[in-house]
Length: 364
Image 1 (cartoon, helix red, strand yellow):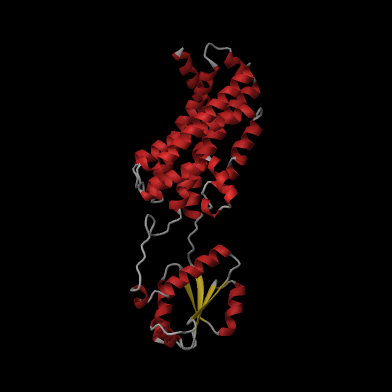
Image 2 (cartoon, helix red, strand yellow):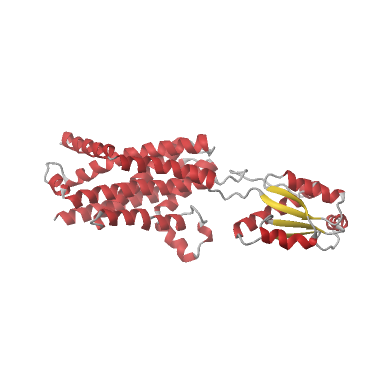
């Protein structure tokens, strides 16, 4: 019986290896997504074009402008006149204009002396792109207020990601998306294909129990997913410089749990669909939107309305992404994410039980 089971595993493995298009999708897409999100898609705002209006170019003004010009986030486009502001912003030549008041030094002295004073600097920012406008305003304020006397008043420390690299945020989230796509989509399409072409009935009359046939089809995809996991972790660490602060063991452990859950989800999809197109649509489209919207990949869970925060609890990727970020970035141990592990294991068991029951019901 064991030999028959291994024969089914070998048969499915050979079938996957012969399908070059499937192998290309499974291996190539994760690499492309990692590089794309790691380098091309970034929440960091760089090279903001700025111009300066300074009626009196005093030493204080010159010092502030030099700080702006030396900062990597800005590209200093030079001094302009007051009447050129609207033209410069509308033409897109600059994204922000910094206006220093004629009595800038006097107002700054009053502010630091605790005396009442009107603002010494005015910022005019192009807000047609809200994300860039918000980042530009924050960056400009931090640089312009970064005088020695101002800095001596407080100290700021950025923990876990002091450089604010977006790859630290995207990589764990992308892992949660990729494994769902690879495992759930490939598994569901594979099993439905067998039913669609009529070979599933042939397999079921063999001496091997139906449950073992299903697991035999899932094992090769689990092995492929482990290879994809290895590739992703290597790219994340050596290409994107994402740390593995919590230890590779904990990251691999929770990733293997998530892989099993994704395979179980693919099995469940195969029990509720009868065509490959339907299985592909559910696994690739229907699953993708909740992961993008409710997992913390793009938007913080805390920013969602209360109702959607509750809905996000049933999205497996939410728990995996949260745990992976803690393990990778914060450097906690696997014991610190025991809650996420238990939830993922519980979801896996539930999906397996429901899927196998539905599968057996169809056979009867």
